[in-house]
Length: 259
Ligand code: COA
Image (cartoon, rainbow, N blue to C red; front, top):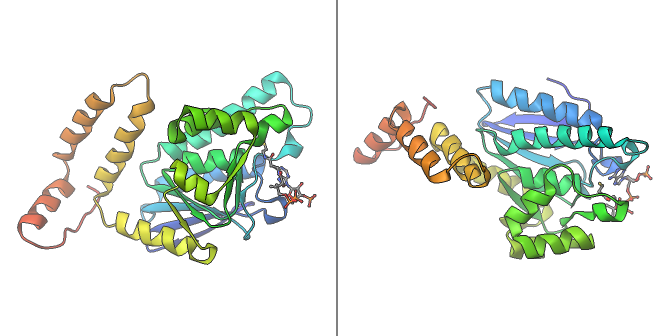
């Protein structure tokens, strides 16, 4: 599989996806969206991939936002179409049944912050910076940022960041709960891989069900507690649940097959 704007590597079940436009601080243009779209299909269909890391090329930026050069003369309808395209892709990341984490290696601004927030959780390097500076451009976030930022850090902090265009550093992002860990830049990918190596030993269907149940908190059409009952019950129909329980009782390590 080859992409115009992504570098990919599969190692030990961990698929590392690097957005590769470092001279434009990895800004999200049409090509990046097309490649992310393709990449998500690949993640779904390739059974060797157990989990995914998304990061940015270079040591300066994760993603510095949507590509502002593509905003030029968009009409209202074209603006809505662009937001819909971004939201569709980011929703697929958020609802992916394989864990997808962001390794934020520098600026995560605008669409970059939105991309990181669509991932299941985030790890940042010490030089990472987060913000939604769209109001500087007479815009608002369009790829889910107003919703996910509010979900992740609460309304007061979210609205302050949205309307001030303030940029926060990694330590503040950690304090706000926007990221789970902050590590030196040269340890970022190793930290992400270590976390996923552990997660990849767990029962894949149970991992997928945890993601689905947690995401239901923000689904107005579903009751999360009912969804949890459903997903919990379904676990009893899996081979992995039988294997996990037997392994515990037999005092051995479980071997999960994802069935
Ligand atoms: N869209 C398109 N190009 C972008 C970009 C974006 N969102 N962010 C950075 N770039 C380009 C710059 O235009 C520049 O290209 P050039 O070398 O051809 O002139 C290159 O990336 C390097 O960026 P530069 O601004 O020179 O780096 P810097 O270190 O001085 O500043 C930032 C870094 C992140 C503070 C600055 O690039 C910035 O503010 N970017 C826009 C952030 C933003 O508003 N994002 C939300 C978009 S909705």
